[in-house]
Image (cartoon, rainbow, N blue to C red):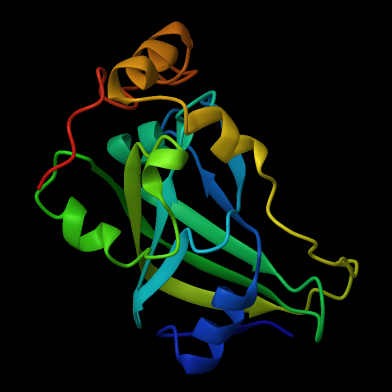
Length: 195
């Protein structure tokens, strides 16, 4: 059934890059804290950087739980499911960091996402995940589903914003600067993009 790997080899990389959606799971350290599970999509918003590192673009949304949990403890699991082909579930268990827009590493990381126009989606950070364990599972109960296309709503909504209007939008939301459990989230106003 399940097998563990010490790295993301070419076969696993191809599987990851072929999936149109993945999920992130994080939690605060507090025993009564809110566990967060988020779906992620948009073709080209995830990149396998090397055998132990995956990164994805953190876009505008209605909360920032993943970022807040990473800032507190760094624990994260990413998961992909095969919706077509052989039944497979793949998880990367590791540590993550939200690299914010004013970080000197930001431009170099952003270069790994040439197919995404970040201004169209309210880019807040790049989440970099270092794999501790890579593990697959059978996925026998995962249904077949077909990918039609990315939704255009996110890009249409956030492409109208500049940094000031995006910061104002985030400031109105309860859980962008601070998580549901009161942890620091995305710094506001949004820092400028490092050059």
